[in-house]
Length: 118
Image (tube, rainbow, N blue to C red; front, side, top):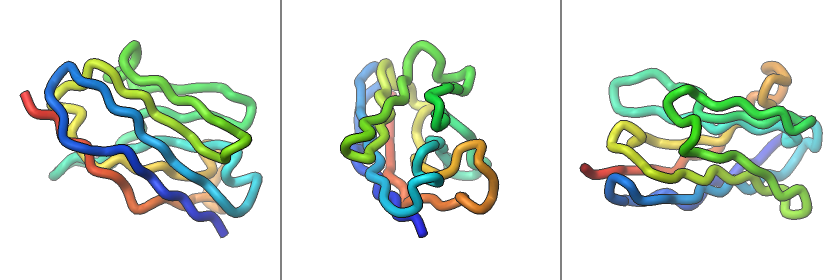
């Protein structure tokens, strides 16, 4: 089993920054790799950034140069630093375990709301 708890969301203005956190516990293999996803109202969930166990990193084109995914292994916590936020970044952000590891590790947290006003 895997438990993921996101925090750090909020209401900000365009151009502001936020840092999301994802505290992970449980299966050490599954929590070795995390993806950050977001879902906006009426839209499908999309990958924002992912980090593998070997620290390979992927970003959605829409966030490259603005968002940074990182990890603190000692705290079993993953972060998503979001700079220069735009209204189109609005959505519920989830961390999902097992990035690129398959469905056996497909656990996600409850999500944290990010709202960016123009």
